[in-house]
Amino acid sequence: MSKTAAPRLERLSFLKRANLTRHHMAQRLFKLMEDKKTNLSVALDVTGQNQLLQMADLLGPHIAVLKTHVDILQDFTPDFGTQLQAIAKKHHFLIFEDRKFADIGQTVSLQYRGGIYRIADWADIINAHPIAGPGIIEGLKGSNLLLLAEMSSAGTLAKGAYTRSVVAMAEAHPETVMGFISLRKLSDQPGIIHFTPGVQLASGKDSLGQRYRTVDEILIKNHSDIIIVGRGITHAANPGEQARIYREAAWQAYVQTVA
Image 1 (spheres, rainbow, N blue to C red):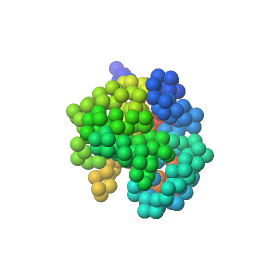
Image 2 (cartoon, rainbow, N blue to C red):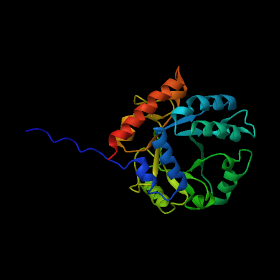
Image 3 (spheres, one colour):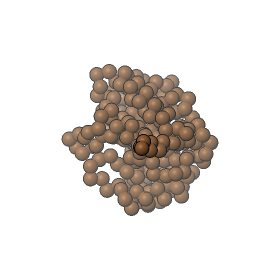
C-alpha cells in the first residue's frame, strides 16, 4: 500500500491579499513584493551612517523591506532619513525602523514623532512590544505598526498566552496594526503580514542566544510571509550576491505554497 502524500500547504497570493486588507501600507507592501518578486527584508545593524546608506544602495535591488536601528548610529545626522528615503525610492523598497517601542501611549507618541531621530518623518513601518497594553497602539495611531508577538532568541517570554493576547490586540486594531514579528503564521486574517527574523540558509545559533531557522522552515512549514536576514547577508564576502541567493530562495519558497 502506498503512503498518502502529505497535504500541500497553500496560501493566497500576495496580490490577492492586497485586495483583502484594510491597511494601506500592508496593501502597498503586498503589491511591492509581487511586482519585485521578493519577500526578503535585510537588517542593517551597522553603526556608521555612510556604511548603512552604501549597503542600502547595494542591497536595494533585492529587498522588499530594509530594517534599521537608527539609535545605534554613532554619526547620525538630521538628513539621514531624507538620504535613505531617496535610496528606497530608487530601488523600490520600504523602510522599517526596528525601534521596538515599549511604553505608555503618551511616551511612545513623543518617541515616534519627536526627539532627534524624528522617525515618523522617514520610516514606512515601525514596531512595538505591546506589553503596555492597547494604549501603545493608540499612541502610535497613524503609523504602520508591527507587533512583536514572538522572538527568535533563546528564553524569550513572548510566547503562549502572551502571544495569543498580542494577536487579539492586533486584530482589534486593523487600521494601525499591519502585522506581526513572529516565528510563524499567527492570524488567519489574510491582510495581516508576518515578518520572521533569525533566518539563515542553515539552522544554528550564535553566542548570544539568537536562534537561526532556515528559509523553508519559516516560509513553507511555518507559513510566514517575509524573512528578515542580517548577518547572513551583511557579513558575507559578497553581500549583494548573498542577498540575491536569499531573495531567490525566499521567493521560491513562497511560490511553492501559493494556492
